[in-house]
Amino acid sequence: MATPTSNYGWFYAKKPDPVPKAGDIFELRSMDVPELKEGMVLVKTLGAVVAPHTRAFLELPGNDVGAEAAGLQRTKIGEVVPCELVAEVVATKSNRYSIGDRVMSFVPLQQYWAFRGDGKDRPGGMAPPKIMGSGSPESALNVSAGLTAYMVVNKHPCGRVDAPCCAAGLLGCFSFLRPKPLKTVLITSAAGGVGIVAGQLYKNKGCKVIGVTSTKQKADKIKDIGFDAAVAYKEEDLDARLGELAPDGIDVFFDNVGAAQLDIGSKHMKVG
Image (tube, rainbow, N blue to C red; front, side, top):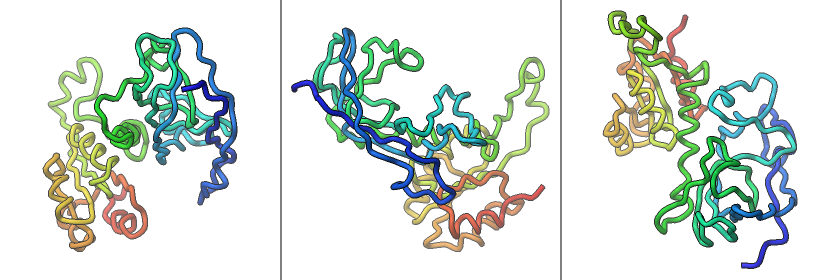
């Protein structure tokens, strides 16, 4: 195809209000098409995910959720929104990529973008990986769910849980002699992309994990992948079931829903 002559991207135009409206926060603006230098690849975006965790990367007062510790770069108001996306190679001066190759990456959300085929301009020195097969772009957009879960489980003060044997040196070697008490975790929307990953991360840390989902069919599925228990809120009394499953209370509440489920789950949180 001919080299594109126009480009555009979604920019953060305004600091989000407590109850944000997308039309106020984001603005579509024109921008230059990246120059294709030797060894570089030009791609066109096919599909993207703008997940809630993108707010974690905004440079705002008090917005410290461990983004830098995870190797992520803060975004300022006036810059392009970062997101997970799938793109197709439309021009290349790298022998590592061919026109028509599809790649995925976490980059600013713009129609055309470019990268070095050797990855030297990317975090960690790794160029965007190619997508194998002929599936839809949407089928490859799953990394953001895992990233959201990872950030909460490992970095955020409200959701972080340390593994049972995480101390350093000799103390860590003998930490099994003083096992930490088992933590009980409640996850709503547990059959969604974020919930499924979060549940498995908490299980790997030795927690008892209870998932909340809509139907018993979904509840059975999340138990199959490791959840200790599951509640189908459309078919069961959520309040009563949580009392049965967590009689001593909940230590960590990973809520993806809000509203009534947040109210009911909060009632069962441990105090103090």
